[in-house]
Image (cartoon, rainbow, N blue to C red; front, side):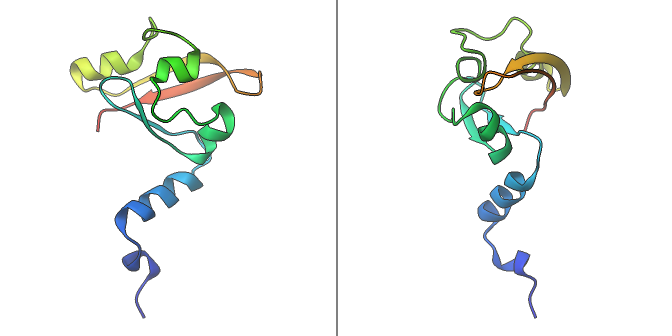
Length: 102
């Protein structure tokens, strides 16, 4: 009997796995455009796929001054930062953001 994982196409399997993670996951391109959000982050911020991350997550018109994505793009080294965020329901929290190049 074949394992179900062998039957699922890779893209469906990856999306399913990412959507079961309880931490928010966002994939952003080099121009800061949000390419993917898992379900956990959609629940906190709403759907911002296609928008610039700084606009969708922070309501800004330009990259954040503390943007760790810029630093990752410069040298390829992963970064972690703590920052305050305001969720779509108005609640504010401190979260750890990890950024890595793919």
